[in-house]
Length: 273
Length: 273
Image (cartoon, rainbow over all chains, first blue to last red; front, side, top):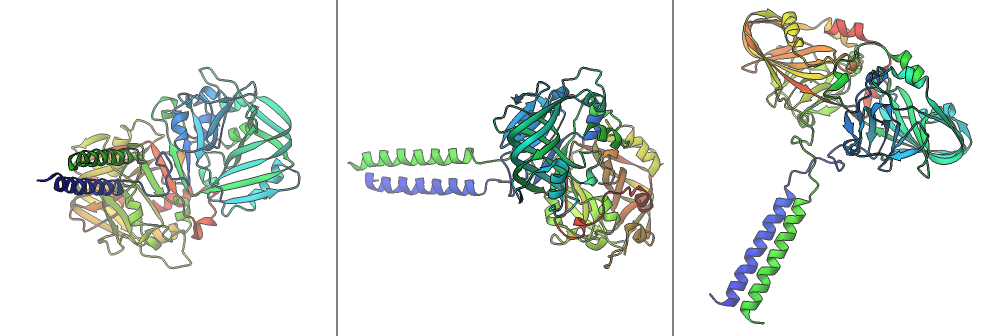
């Protein structure tokens, strides 16, 4: 065999190998679209535990923030042992602790209750006149296509007045959430720009999450915020992401396994929100 | 350049290209483990729509059986317009129609309400003395690790006596489910071997699915079955798959968007089950 002929064979063999490798790449078992980095559908609202478990003092974290972030770049919840109000926006996650300051989460730390999604706006509502929280909620609710779906809600704007709260880390034996929030720390923020992040939950998920609106807030400079109690929005935009799918990851151990989730805790919930 | 030298260059270049292709393959965005063929976690109970929507006559199918099968090889539900009781076992899906016969599903046909999972037994309970349905349910319930999780239940055995039902396809305007099942067709099967397939749902999912047990049945020869109303199990095995995750796919159109899901329909549910 001459060098020339050998060269031709080598080139042909290499070409076959490359084509084979490309076919291998093409038939690799990719999941069905649309998917996120973690394999989750982007139109899924992902939740850890249930609100009725939290209301009764199930405060031990069951999922790390790193794992939560695989299911969304946007969301709310709370820290392990209720240590702070959680907010995630644009893939950055913070806990607003009882000192009123925002702390980036430690990915290895855990949450006992949280909800997250990959936020893709399906609808925008422009707000160009001042309104309080109740008026804002009514304005947005009028635009929702159904009362039976889950929606992620993002409000960016200028807030002349905004009231939030946070709670301190709890010690065992854990009190009920209504007893914790009776001693919550309230923050009044004046003339801030920032983002409220949260969800609108349908009645069908009563006991699982908070029916209606549930919003947390963080300032544009990512220094302060908390669970929203009241607000005046001067101007801004509300973006709504309709999430057709709902996924719940239930804790596989700890207090969750034995807490009584058969009752109606709507009165507890009213005290807490 | 000599032929020899050219050959060496060609081989080196081909090697680089191959290594490049392999790196490309290695960093392709595979979903996180553990996943099924469809990208779903095998420990997820996947559900279409809600029981309260079905109870109120939301009978138009919203998901194809082909799509449902991507979320499980095991499950129950019903056909479009309530045309048959659905059962899936070992990846084979059947509708038991009102003539009492089992028909393999058409993958393009749809379901208005169904639940599915990839069945992996976590626990087996051997039944070696005859018992009725209530005794069997108590026996299995005593083994469940928590009343707050979802379980897939599979019963294989010999049944001296088994009572099932099915219902006919409905026409619009759809009646409520309790009115449909008031005229259900009941089948009594004697001395059959087969498999009961279904779920145990925690109270936290009241309104979403059927709290407690919900079982459908099919004979070993895959000819008959239905929604289980009563049974005597002579001997057999019960396998239980604990599913920590729960996913709900809500219909994005049709009657679901406007049905009132805020009420307590537990009385309707009692009539139906």
